[in-house]
Length: 280
Ligand code: SF4
Image (cartoon, rainbow, N blue to C red; front, top):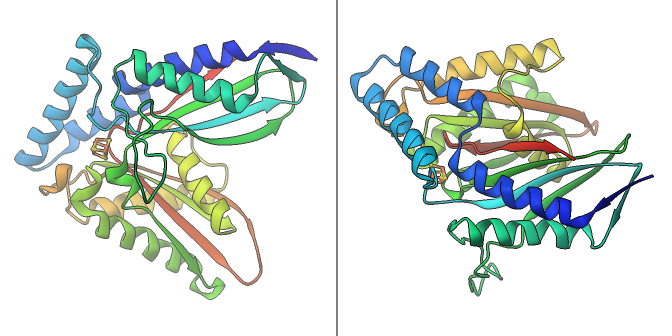
């Protein structure tokens, strides 16, 4: 067994919350650059130029990329040979979020209760997804999620007979309904299969996958390409003002499902798509 002190988790999460909100991940930066070079409308290019300028200012002057610094979504893969000492995972993670958002002067956006809505004032609690993996390491991904785009996300419980055409239709419907509200150009995370909740978690995780990593299954790779093309044919464009670049990428994850169902989740993210991963 390898012992890891809970303070290591807190320290890393704190740093990652601050970094993710000020520096865009390299894969996203490249995608945005590519969009600038391929945008066909003048207005679209101007919007993309402004987004790039905003990114430069954010990292030079340590100002968050966006005023909505998000709800902290954490994926944590825990090696079976790891023994955590000093605190629980949940406390250690939330302490990291608390310190990161407080010391990093990031906006506190979380309310204690969905109906009574009193701000927790430290952006906790995080939404945490745990998984156990072989080995003696802990892999943490921090993905602060803005709610302009989160509010535009959808789950569809399709029938098996709807097939792949039904899936394509569901993705396009969600994107068209999102329109300018998801702060395009967007990244579209899709989960196909599993159950109601499994496909939603897959769609969220898909957003954190490096845009340069392609799925193993050929039909999924083709579906990603086809959907990106179709989404960009909608003409919604940067900031919804028209143009070629409505989405920068479509990332799809799949999982086995029940004979009677075909769940599909579409988790939409804006151009910021904050995500950072570290291994301890
Ligand atoms: S959706 Fe993204 S860009 Fe739009 S306000 Fe939220 S975090 Fe900011």
